[in-house]
Image (cartoon, rainbow, N blue to C red):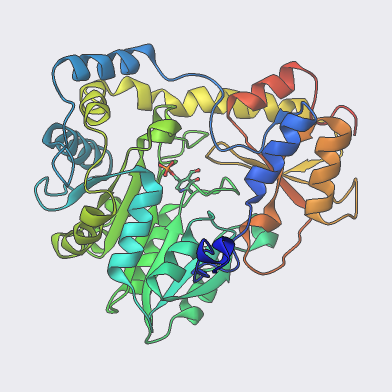
Length: 392
Ligand SMILES: Cc1ncc(COP(=O)(O)O)c(C=O)c1O
């Protein structure tokens, strides 16, 4: 007789992402809970989104917007996205063919990378980078070419290194500004450098701009839609999660020239088909008022300033953060320990969870720098509670 346990044996799966384990965010959040720590290592606010936005969802549901949305997104939302992008950055995407609503920026990135790259293609990523980029490239069967940001120049892009990394196989160049986790933003000169690198090549740019509205000190976000040349060969990805304090809604979008959007939509269609209908209608209605995103820079800048002021007397050397939720802190005056060791000590002994920046690199890299979930609510609580730095 057959052993029933054998019959029930699970066939050995093929591991498409063999290097992926538990992310540092999960590890640090678990430690933060265990040690009742202030969690600066999370990528979301700990305050709620606008009740008016929540009401708009209820209104949309009551109005009967509860069945599948159109595959590229509901028309009113695509119209608002196109209008907002045109008003802010000057490039008008075609609502019918060039704007696709996705399940957050993460799905837009995955759909774009899988649609636009394949085996034999190289994809340039700037490290440190958001953790979904590498898996997207791996699942597409393409090869990541990692170019480090210049840690000695506060993580600015070294465009000469980017240029040097380009080969005839380069298919995609992925950028993310304002940048997670360094808080760096692009200047107009950076856009010009990017233009000169891709002009006359077949390279597509994927620009992850989820923090487009979290830019400080009077700066203006330098997105790729400001450049006609870049807009004509780029996928612009953004998300309402960061802009409207609603990361759990997972609604984002990809804007790209029609030929690229057509390919992205083919993948999107069979990845999720469409995104939550009432959420889309609610966001469309809420986007009629520009104040929520126009007020965002000042809102987060106050939090950044408060956080940085509280740490000013400590031995942490704070790196300038020009945007995003995040602030990096150099702790080399405090400890010679590696970033993951230091981050663990920080949470276990001092009740503050931060993220080692080394976690944003594929290969080992250690700069004695940890990142705090910067301008999120956790940061404010850290300041109010006198935590984060007082003991150093
Ligand atoms: C740089 C960057 N890109 C994309 C995302 C994901 O955005 P979404 O939640 O809309 O998928 C995040 C979230 O933290 C991010 O920091």
